[in-house]
Image 1 (cartoon, rainbow, N blue to C red):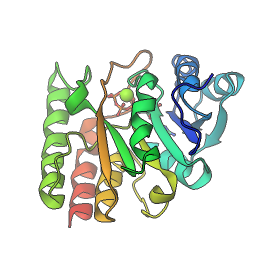
Image 2: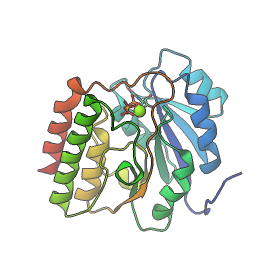
Image 3: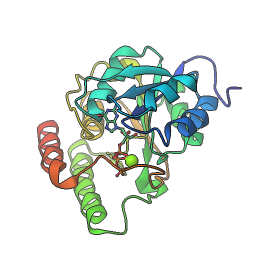
Image 4: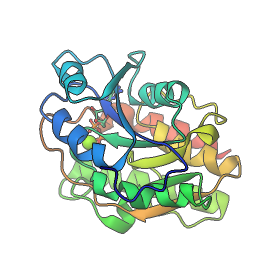
Length: 230
Ligand SMILES: Nc1nc2c(ncn2[C@@H]2O[C@H](COP(=O)(O)OP(=O)(O)OP(=O)(O)O)[C@@H](O)[C@H]2O)c(=O)[nH]1
Ligand SMILES: [Mg+2]
C-alpha cells in the first residue's frame, strides 16, 4: 500500500550503493511503502548488492564507476519519475521521512527538499577528530552558500533529499564524488529554483564501512565550493 501519496506526481526512491550487501534488503523494504518504484544505482559492487536488490524488486542501474556523484547524475538522466528521492543504502536515512520530503515539491512550493541534519541531528558528525573536521568544513561551506545567496539553509551536504527531476536535468551537474550534494544545492540556488528543508536525523551506518576518506577529498570540496560560488 502507498502511504500519504497524492496521485499527481510519480515518486522514485533512488538508493546509492557500492558493496552494501549487508544493508540493501532492509533499505529497499523500508523505502517501498513510500514510493511508486525503487531503483538502486550501483557503483560496480563486487559483492551481492545487485542480486539482492533485484530479488527485492528494485530496478538496477549501473553508474560509470566514477563515484557517488556519477551515480546521482546517472539517476537524474535515466529515471523518468517526476520526483527522485535519493537515499543512502547504509541505514543512515529513515524512509519514513519521505512523505514529508516530497510534499513541498508536490504542492509546487519547492524544487528540491533536503533532509537537514542541522535540524534533525546526526550520529555521524560528532565524537572524533575526523567528524569534527568534517562538520567544521561543511559548516564553513554552508555559511558561504547562505551568504552568497542570502538564504538560511542548515545543511548543504546531506545525501537524503528529493528533487524535481525536470529541474535537476537543467543543472549540468559535473561532480563525480560526494561533492555532488553541495553542487546540487548551489546550482539549484544559482538557477533560481526553490530549496526547502525538513528535519532529518542521520543514523550511524548499520553494516560495512564508509567510503569517505576526508584526507583524500577535502580539497575537492573546497574546489567545488569555490567553482560554484563564484
Ligand atoms: N552509485 C554509487 N554509490 C556509491 C558509490 N560509493 C559509495 N556509494 C554509496 O553512497 C552512499 C554514501 O556512501 P558512504 O560511504 O556511506 O558515505 P557517507 O554517508 O557520506 O559517509 P559516512 O557518514 O561515513 O557514512 C552509500 O549508500 C554508498 O554505498 C559509488 O561509487 N557509486
Ligand atoms: Mg553513510
